[in-house]
Length: 72
Image (cartoon, rainbow, N blue to C red; front, side, top):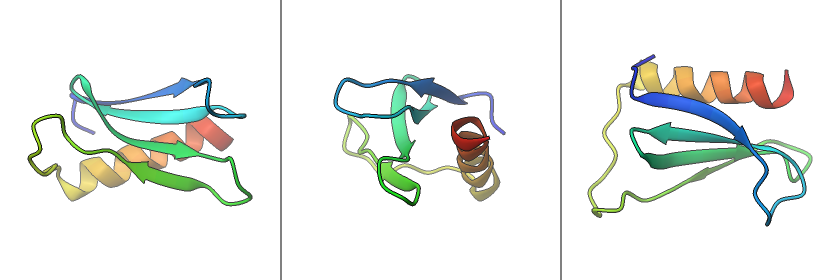
């Protein structure tokens, strides 16, 4: 996984359970949460309005790591 992508667990005040925040550099790319029965993935827009361009393998690796950290 690219060094600029990281996954952190967080407890936002608007969520009942922990979430996995996926960051690209200093911006949040996505959030994986388990507020419902199934995991839900929420994507965020870039602050500069440009589209995210990530390698497929890096993106899938980050999502798998987020899932692993969130639900074990």
